[in-house]
Length: 195
Image (cartoon, rainbow, N blue to C red):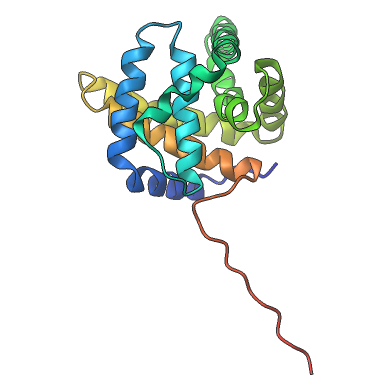
């Protein structure tokens, strides 16, 4: 695992978001509508995560990708319960523990979706990352929550844009930390011949 680099994550996240603005914004609207039924929220978030992982790797995406989570409903539903449990545990710990919970859960759904792990396995992977880079994990999680919250504060009008952007940055950061493909092309330098 690599350390999180904020500038790179935002740069790559912006590229993912910009290249897929319409599709991601509409898809996030769909995710939000379906997530009003709390049972479906983790499944829809998993589908949106799947969509963003594909976009981050230069693959074509379509709005229907947000329903990908239904292909493994049980695993994502259990993941959602575990996610909620960790958040509640953090909130109970003097309220300030919520920040640590957000840091631990920063890559929870990307790990579940990308690595096809169970909820417990994904939480274990996230915990291992958090222990090695906890200040950046907490900082990134808080910044992304603020970005998301900006859209919500404007009568929820812009949440589809800010939410899609925050998720895009999260996926770019995930790719950076876990070594997945990024949106930046690698530059190969051929060695010079020694005569």
